[in-house]
Length: 175
Ligand code: G3D
Ligand code: MG
Image 1 (cartoon, rainbow, N blue to C red):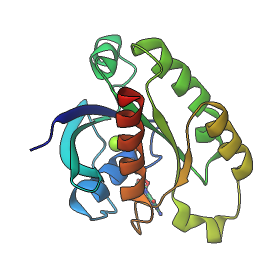
Image 2: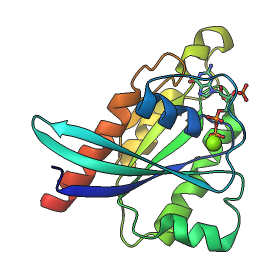
Image 3: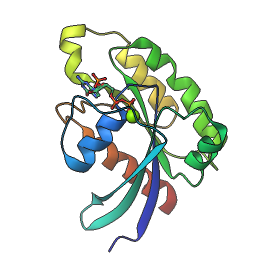
């Protein structure tokens, strides 16, 4: 039985792949056409963050109504950590992560751990480098975080992203 129950948030601009990442993580599949997320989906999964140590994540995936104040306060309340996601092929989504981080820090109790995610890694070969990935790494490290590149399509690093976030949450609490 898991003794840790952790609320974690998926944050970042529209269409960066938040829903695809959580679907990949939970069900290990990728679906090309999701309907637009409306409201908030809450999905649960156990994570073995180190051998024989389990945490139960409830993963909050917010959709198109994220701008509404009443949903936003419910969304952030009691959060233990967040994935902050941008799309490696769209610079604007990278720029917007600053705004998201400000909001996370504004609406959560303390400096909750987050993991900085550049998603759609599978497209980089065709699209080429759009953002400075070294800068992304430095930004994450300066904010006390880690930068991980993922693909919800191939599944690359998706488990690692959620597991790393879980580890960081647990470490921040037990030290
Ligand atoms: P969101 O929940 O952040 O809004 P979605 O984003 O998960 O709905 O994904 C938005 C679009 O990006 C979807 O395409 C989805 O299939 C695609 N996508 C998500 N992650 C990846 C990835 O890692 N690689 C690739 N190639 N595509 C990805 P559509 O066409 O359905 O809008
Ligand atoms: Mg979504």
